[in-house]
Length: 469
Image (cartoon, rainbow, N blue to C red):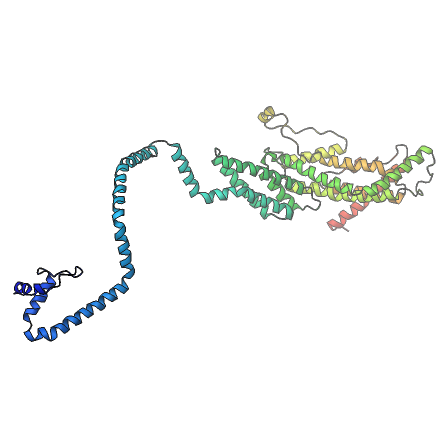
């Protein structure tokens, strides 16, 4: 019945406006509404149905207004996009066509790139990239290696600034040096490691100079000296001896030279007193040349400044010479036979005799090098010290004409000789002719009296030390 009803209502549809098209019978909404109309009574078509339609129309209007308010921006944007769609679609088609034309070129470039940077073939650019990636992964290790020379220089500088009593920084510096040497042995072809090793060698030369300078300090102790020599053995192993007898190598001679330099510098501090003694020497020589020398030598008033100079000189000489030799023997303990032979040779030279060298037990070593075994550096060092003292005494002792002053000085010299005699360097017999005229019996008697008193006093001291009354 829907079709007849639709045909019945068709003449009443408003066809003049295009904004509201005529409903079609095949429309589901129209078909449902026509089916609903056929079920309604006739009275309701004129009473309730218009109100229902008006209410539905008003509700739909409110819904449309609310939707328009909520979706205004979206609707405007959709309208804009819809208006530009006509121009964008041709552009999209042109871009797609261009992409289709460029795909073969892209494929050729990709194939060329894969062939050029293939891992199966050697490529310089790829090798550089691999090295760059390897460096990026190991940047922390490289930074630590580059910091090694700076750390080494800092440790050496801090140890030098703090003095010879600091041991931790030098030990750390030597550990760093050993680590760098090991790296240099493992990676000899590396330019970076070679450059760092070169910087390290310069720093170690500075450390060697600092250690040698520390050996020239005045108040160096035995422990500090042993540590310094131990560090020098590690820093400069070429100075360490490899022989059986002469174990100290060049370090022993270096130690003695440094300590001798310290002794000479300490004695040079007495130059003001020495100048006064030189003035008294000039006066004495002038008196002798003019023949106005006093006949009573004990009453001669000259020589006081020379006495002060010699007392201080002998005191410094005794302390430093004993300390040098005793410290040397503690730092460089040689073989017993070699030390005995050195002491015997020194005593024989003191007496003016000659010693025969020990026979070689190993014939092969004698054939290989006739100069081995080399003598210890200490063999002739006491004679050099005694030579310094002898020259000073021969030059200035004749200025002292007071008998008691001369006896005091000679006794002091004998104590010095006895001090070195405990280390095998007794030089008392070499001092018999110091400042003494060959034709003067009084001077010989004076020397004999001083020796006698010294021996009596030494005997008493030995008895007291051994507990014999």
